[in-house]
Amino acid sequence: MLTCFGKKNIRLTILTYTLKILLIDRPDGTYCFRLHNDRVYYMSERILKLATNISRDKLVSVGTCFGKFTKTQKFRLHITALDFLAPYAKFKVWVKPGSEQSFLYGNHIMKSGLGRITENTAQYQGVVVYSMADVPLGFGVAAKTTQECRMVDPMSIVVFHQADIGEYIRSEDTLT
Image 1 (spheres, helix red, strand yellow):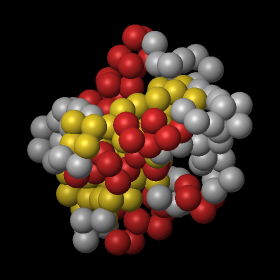
Image 2: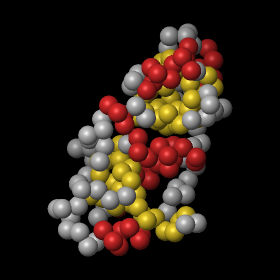
Image 3: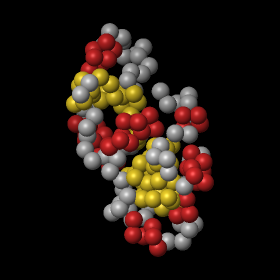
Image 4: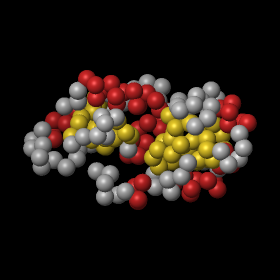
């Protein structure tokens, strides 16, 4: 079961990327977050009721893994949460086609690879990274504000890499 501290930590992380938490009461039912083996899963209450028939030690995963708690009890989003958070992202970054592959290999985004950035993005703000064709590619943290991005040299880092869809291939055995 998630503690009050854990719930607050998850909400703060999700709010870093989205306007508000719109994931609980959805038109297709009520959804919830549950903790299992230091990982947080997002599932419908219907699936949760079905999962109670399986003992916790035999249960591998249930629902969609949103992230995990580190050893220092900080919540870290997994790339599997991208499809749920991307439609609600308040700060976005678009990457030029030439820099998409570099980002998908786990590298930071340089100013030379930056296509567009949402206005008024603050430094160290969570951003969702998109291709120029509006396909969500991953998560990052803005290294510079929107205004600073206009002035920096082309080889400066503007977005720190956090997670990308290339992790499905690179870390496929640990994404449960």
